[in-house]
Image 1 (cartoon, rainbow, N blue to C red):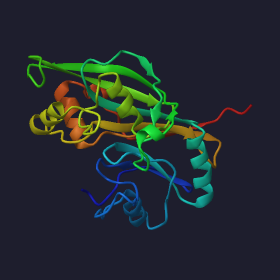
Image 2 (cartoon, rainbow, N blue to C red):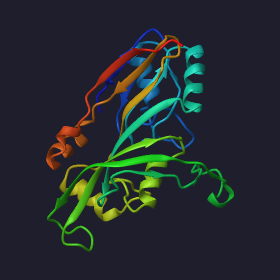
Image 3 (cartoon, rainbow, N blue to C red):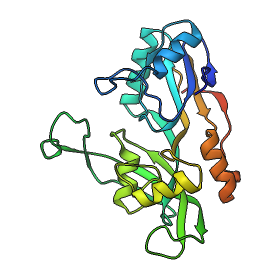
Image 4 (cartoon, rainbow, N blue to C red):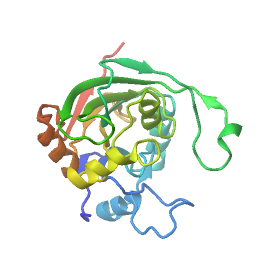
Length: 252
């Protein structure tokens, strides 16, 4: 793992970086024995304190935003809590996913603190669409050929493992998802396609800048594992690139 994190954007108030897959954002009670955390690495790289304002699951890669002081952190946290952020993810799933669909099955929280039956079902909404697909002449499951899709997911709520659970519930589990996916397909990608990780990446965030009259749009390139897989499957045209755009907000 490289010591240097990829900086996507930095100004006087916030910083956006690419979070590598497999890296925890910060210490938790479940992180016993872990020594590497995104928060610590970014702090050391910048030489100043940073404040997390949202989360990404450990196996998920992609764009994350941190505030550079507590006042900005409070504003950004409110922006995420109030769902005033546009999020875009890319995922590789088993099967040929729907061309466009809103998944709105309510989800119970998965925090490990209580039995799931004791947790209330919460509103959860994810818009998904199939961008591409591929058919391989390999029998992984019971069929002689195996089909996979590149899905775009735009979550409108922020439940834990929301995209993973919604896609799995529709029969299109994300490759590399040990909890909600299928082991034979996960092993095939790990052993034959050099993709031993969850194939889910946060590739875009857009939100109103907390201290400026502008909307900040951030795009994040995929890591080497997913980039190589996209090239192998003929999906290179869907590869995002690192970019940061600031657009002035229209005055009313």
